Image (cartoon, rainbow, N blue to C red; front, side, top):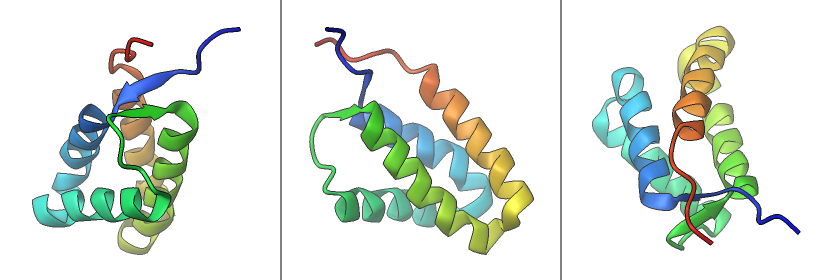
Length: 91
């Protein structure tokens, strides 16, 4: 059976902050990601694909308030692309 896709948590959070900073500012971008991680119980060094998806969905819901639906869609597409390009974590 194949292992689920996993990414390094630190790298995912770095990408989220990088992509969101132009829209929310550095502090809010890093705080939003950290708060959602706490809410989802994310605390380990690795994130399985389902946790990345959950984190992105939480971010999407919050961003709509600040950016509107259209711009949120664009930002989320950029986030998903950047995260997809991160290297997979070794099993």
